[in-house]
Image (cartoon, rainbow, N blue to C red; front, side, top):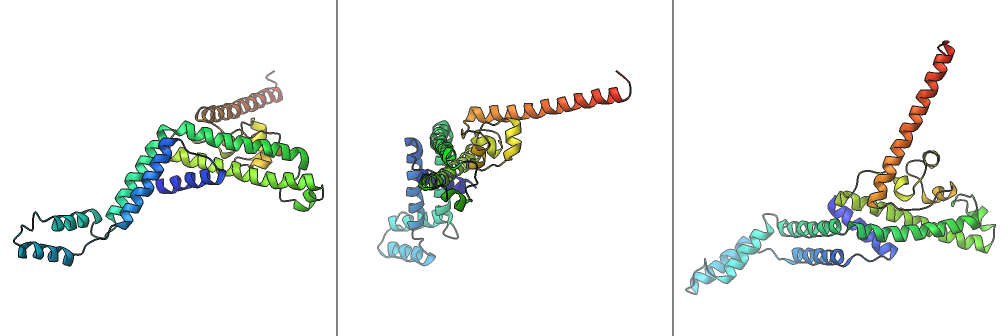
Length: 257
């Protein structure tokens, strides 16, 4: 999964026009260099090795110290039996370097994602002021409101996609670096009270959050934990209220009070 997560984060940053911290960018460039090196190696055959050994012997040399023989053996060792070992090994080494860089600079990467997502959220809020409480799929109704609504609609669709991509990259980064515990996708992009959370659902679309009165606010490492804890506490408090009300009604019904 590591390569998929790295690829996803890279694609997201490209799509949203963001820049990685310099050490992360360097680790990514290193991975590309290592990948190219792994795929460019021509794996010598056994016939190549024997021919080189024969040439060394016939030239009155020591085939065990001949540079050409040593080079072929080194290439064969690195490539492995199938010829893919070097490509795989270098890719793994490069991926580990990126993982380390992402882990060391996770907060900076999250801050970049947050800046982009929150800015997109502000566009969604402004678009909502013009479009009103309509689903973004209701194109005919929105376009009937005029050119301002049409522009707001176009901006809202782009911005909603930006928030989605930032949220998904956030998740990939969390999986890659183990930076935080699991958080509901909705709480990842907005700090909502329990009632609003249940209204929009556990994996709400950004536009639905705006329609419900919420604000796009991509979580940080700290706020992700705070939101998850607050959500659990709210559920517990509701259950306690429910249990208390049930007990009171039960006692009343059975003449205990």
